[in-house]
Length: 487
Image 1 (cartoon, helix red, strand yellow):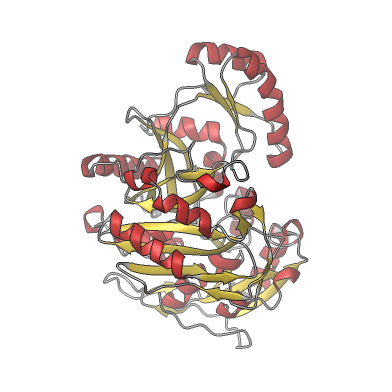
Image 2 (tube, rainbow, N blue to C red):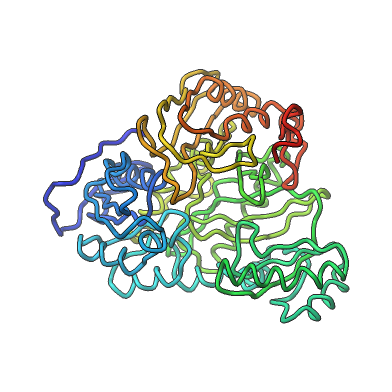
């Protein structure tokens, strides 16, 4: 992942740049001269690296809290978009768009989080002649609402979890639907994510109590209290398929990732390929996901997420219309630079990769290292990184480290607590696990508490090594000596 960066100060031209992409044998093509990176931290660095590989100048934005941050050095030019609170800076699409216009950027990459799945921001870009690196506003809007997304994927041929057809208007409608589907059921926010506005209900009484609570929580979190209902599937695995699709109707898949190690519906460890899928099932799932993406007119990189039941049934859950945090897992086992492909597709280029060109080699595991005290109920621990040494070459496989932090910098209390992503790749799953363990055990991060103890416990647990877990369990955690003090 080598690249060359240049700090701001150079003269900004207005011409487009002709460059040769880094992969394949594609001819030179006109790409964007400047691209606004509408995000911060680790994902901003990742996008900047892809820009440098393609010969595109990345323009970064920052809040007052991020002024002078190490990761801004990866940008060719930077613009302040507001004070520390994200609502006044990184979530201000008007200010971000103004920054793009004033710096004469012809494209905008939203990364993940913040405005990445905001159809209004995508539409504003289009109105001002700026290419949004992602699907159309219409597709973002349709797939961002869980009930319409389910219906779209049902029409595209994917199986969906049994539940309501569309939204449930009120508690009586929910009770009637649950009686037909069968308990236990789960109610979910139509605009939701991260577990907010979500409640499991084992009987009618619990459903009647949970419905108004979930609606109120969803309204507070997302501005909409609309809910839908599904049968609750016990013991499911979270399996997601990475797809790429261009504007000419061509879509492929890059295999799947297993993201079942979660806490409160937040992913902690991701790996690829899924350790419990056969090669035949993997090809079948990938093919179905790519066909579904093409059927809805999807353009760009995206992820179709499934729940794999204990009985082996696979059900569509949702689609993420953006780059995923865990995309390096797929990059390491396929050799495909997903961010470069995103930018190429947004520039109007055909996706020259064919499904038969995609091969899978080895096994990769990603650990998200957060500034949290795992032994104190994952309490956030922002502060100064007095020591920041990530071990990379401990073998037996190889390591990739994606981070925006440096020793002597501080983890901000204003934003997410991600410090680094460690991705290990080996010839097989056992080698990948051992490589990750070696890296975690030999890394030194001081000044803050991190989630490394949790990762070590999970990776060394018998359940994880055997693949015997689901989204409702955190294998190996809390450790026996900490039970009762951690969760």
